[in-house]
Length: 402
Ligand SMILES: Cc1cc2nc3c(=O)[nH]c(=O)nc-3n(C[C@H](O)[C@H](O)[C@H](O)COP(=O)(O)OP(=O)(O)OC[C@H]3O[C@@H](n4cnc5c(N)ncnc54)[C@H](O)[C@@H]3O)c2cc1C
Image (cartoon, rainbow, N blue to C red; front, side, top):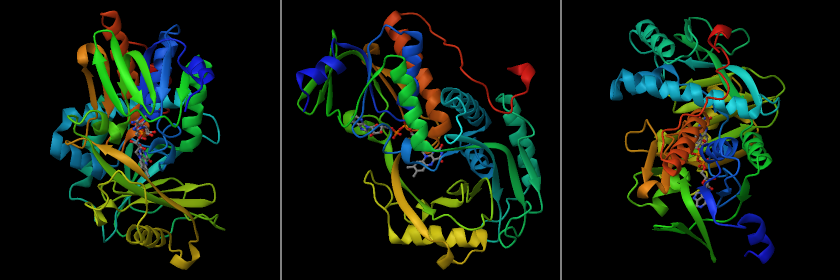
């Protein structure tokens, strides 16, 4: 419940833009607008703390796509669509790293691996596929060679898992996701932006003068709204098709010896594991119960958690009983019907922009889509085409192309 003081601080006048949702997408949009339109009163309204349903609780991989994941996407959607998505992720990762200022403890440069085993065998014609993917990466403005195949596990790795081959991805990032969201929040507030947390928006109404947002007992007024609540968009706009899917992860206690360093992917991106200091984190396993995990309720299940521990044991050779679990949790992702490109739409005569449905790839994708959403909001308000500069550059991009 707000007092006069709260209202005076947060909403001293009708807002220029209210952003619903303070995850990677919403915060990137918020920072972009304040950077380029500093006089606008921009408020991020969050039902929880910022990004608590996905961005700040995710697994912390900044990745462009593992080979089998991209091959499946090419098969389902064709090369041009996947190339464009790759371009967006490269630009999104660059924007994110720029805003995080590559701060130690928030971001670490790493590498990725896709591993093949008897359970997940190498696809036929892998070398040809990798050539295609490296071509795609070049076309999308990324570094090449990016995907590199080799037959032996890197030094120090447990040998049991790699019965056929490995693909190394030349760069992937590792984030502390909660610290990353906190850093974005700080950047936005330093630019004069306002954040109101624990304030779910319950409904939106439009009239020619602007948007009315009902939130508990408060009615907020804004000229424009950005809906960046990802999986929760349909609660406010039921005609927008985004499904909520839960993702579960677990992290171990610190281990004496870390059997691998880097980001590991298998099963077409459905499984992922990484080091976190002296701990290991693993996530995925939705395919064990697709129907049960199609939910917007947080929670973990014994079946998936047991599978995650088994897979970590398989990957590292460490017996299950020697992988002490420190924490297990879940978050909610938003999936569009095509499961690839997110939704970025202008609605209600430019008073509403929807930027949501990151299809489980929002760490890299969200910051790009957020920037595009900011451009659309400014464009609609000012009635002219807007292309704002791209902040940052991709970590491996050669100097001459910066
Ligand atoms: C466990 C887990 C692991 C993942 N791992 C990775 C990974 O390693 N790499 C990767 O790229 N992606 C990963 N993802 C996906 C990634 O986290 C998401 O794609 C990304 O965070 C989406 O960002 P967003 O800003 O669009 O949405 P969100 O982060 O979901 O932000 C939306 C915000 O809107 C708020 N909200 C919802 N409804 C309302 C309302 N009515 N009023 C006000 N606020 C509202 C929510 O509280 C939420 O904070 C993972 C997801 C999960 C759940």
